[in-house]
Length: 88
Image 1 (cartoon, rainbow, N blue to C red):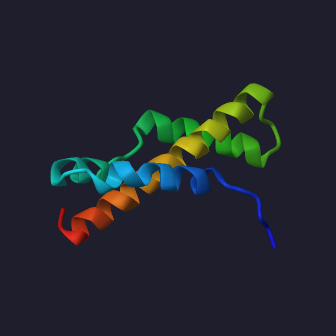
Image 2: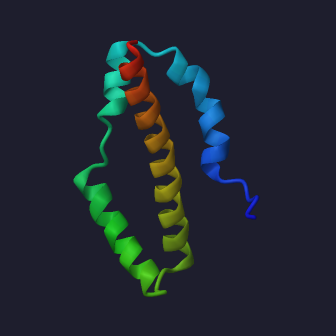
């Protein structure tokens, strides 16, 4: 059994107070968050290089940051959508 703590395990409870206190307008904003075209393109380049085992240490750090930021926004997005369903 894998008991490794993931970034999302840490972020999720820390974000609860924020997402529990947002209004409808802010929930809608979070629910509609999308990465920019440039961000998607960069992530694709880094992902391809990672799959080929060609990332430099600096690129690996950048790729990992994209993943962590993506996790953060995925949590905010999901919590906002749930808040909208619950009727904030």
